[in-house]
Length: 382
Image (cartoon, rainbow, N blue to C red; front, side, top):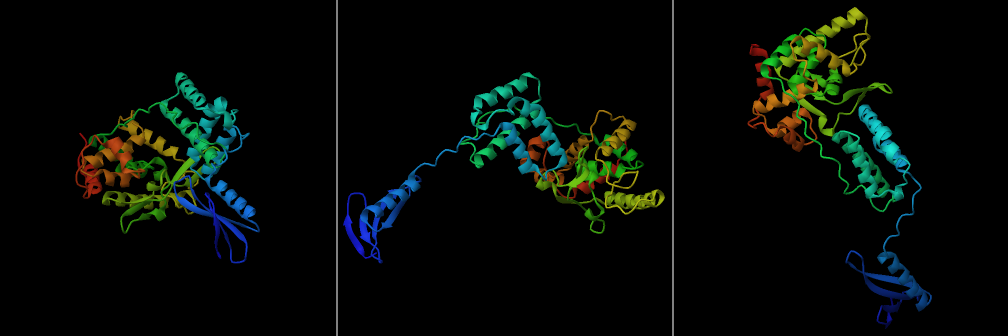
């Protein structure tokens, strides 16, 4: 700039090095910052007009998004496709059921721009009056809220009308835990069952059903005595049996195996080799396989195995998932700290573990898995 020529009450005129006029003005931005804005032109008027246009662009509030013709049903379907295209098959199946049975019939034809918080509150109240479980209602609300939030991000909505709309409080359901004697009885019978090792791993390490079904030989290091949870099997009629990610990123973990389970895996390896030879199977990557062809095992076969074993020892009232709960209870009883139990179980956070098991005492970690397996192995059932 060659120097300021004139200053009025709103800004300063000047000349640029190439002889053009300039107009500079200091403004306060919406966030409180001060900024000098300049416009240039062949005349003072043009320079000032350009400066004013730049100021207007900086300080003017953003224009609201135009009304979208999209419906809630279309947006929810879009959200599911965008965010869960490669999700766990069982999760997607559950979401589709909730969308088809609870969201689409009530909200599917409603245009995004016309949905109000009062509509959503009435929808949740209607589900309560229809006797829907609080957990199911909470899942439906989560899906709609996430879909509408995606619409806000795409500038189809100025704000999310689900914000502030509450779902019923979900009661905490605490699974049942076996006693040590019951666990010993269950493990004793499991030793003679074809899928007994899976039951022993679920009870001894707190694995999820899909994690146990998805164990591969490459996940086992018998020399180091470790087991890696790298994924899980799931099944739906549409997809069949598929190997996918664990329930949460924290579900991917490595666990030090007690000697008792290392021996059990070695024995299972030998037995699987004999089965392959007898049945004419090809090579398999998985510890637990279909008896028909040595292929991937449907996870619900572990339910069937557990029911058979549990019935034999009089534990019909227990679920397979109660073995995972039992493992956590036993570990805490052995003195393992909450953070370590979270790592063993693969919970999303220690807060989740604390929320479920805070009523149990904490203590020192040590080699609790080994101590626990010795209790299972050495103490005789009554």
